[in-house]
Length: 78
Image 1 (cartoon, one colour):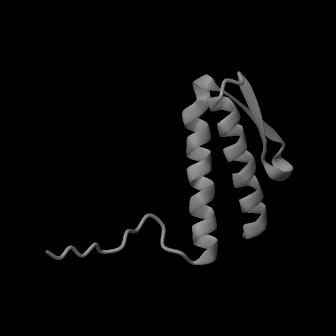
Image 2: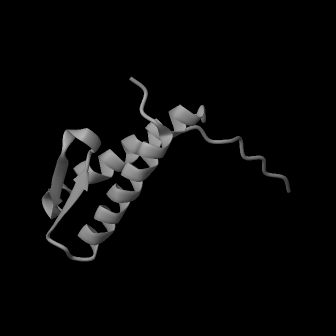
């Protein structure tokens, strides 16, 4: 089942907002995970939230057909 890109973007925005709140000092934040309910993160699970954000970004890139994690060749001339 493919997830709509707009749904992924909404989830990403919610996760990034939760990460921001967590980093500015809120003790716990919740993120809605679609029809699966919600997940609560605290400072101890910050890396799990970072991983979730990275996963969403990768899913969005894959849905758009963009290469994931690739960099362009850098040409340097003197």
